[in-house]
Length: 61
Figure 1 (spheres, rainbow, N blue to C red):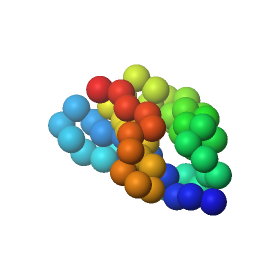
Figure 2 (cartoon, helix red, strand yellow):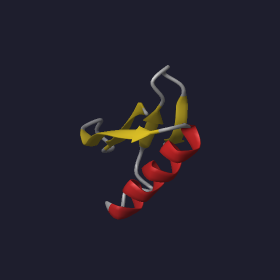
Figure 3 (cartoon, helix red, strand yellow):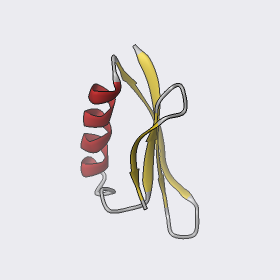
Figure 4 (cartoon, rainbow, N blue to C red):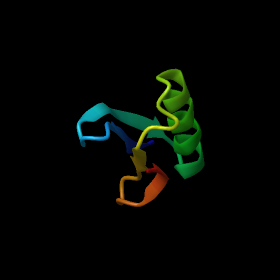
């Protein structure tokens, strides 16, 4: 399992959500990240999901 990092930001740059996601691959991490964003109603808020090697998996501005 790999550790991915999901972060959601307010318009003024404050971190609203900062969580780790454990997943076997990028696809699984993206699915878990999207589910978590929907759960907290942050799908349309600025966010990013970053892989362990610093690649962006999800990004919304």
